[in-house]
Image (cartoon, rainbow, N blue to C red; front, top):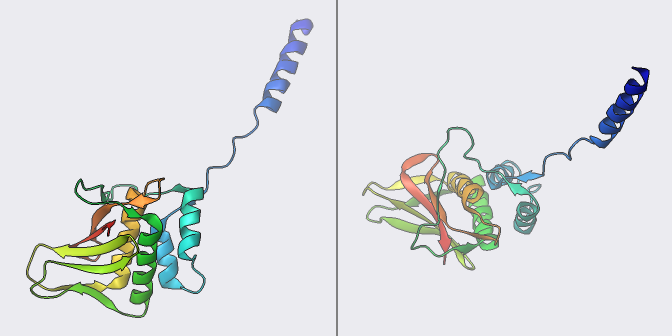
Length: 176
């Protein structure tokens, strides 16, 4: 019995040494959280290039966790936008909203381009004739959700989501 117990103890000790804990979970990045950081304090938030680099180096987490609806990604007739250019639009809109500026669709219009930088554009559209206006922060927040769900590893994005604060306004990210 003693002869069997010693090898078993040695085997158990070897197994415990070999069972090194797994590496910690990969680093995550959320464009939606980046927007919140810009709104809270634009001076300390990541720059556009830093945010895109952080997204490339991490697992981008979707803000559509739990029961929240996921953004509509890759509409078939929309060209994909370069991620860096779209992120620059997000930064622009968040900073604009941080200063209290509203983004909207005027009476008589069904859609408006809210930002165009390089090969990316952010558009808002609506299904009614009623003018729509929200703080540009909410447009940026909505685009953050689209980013978290629709950004691809080839650094392109296309998608849309209902504005977080105005259900009659659809915010789209697409190529210019």
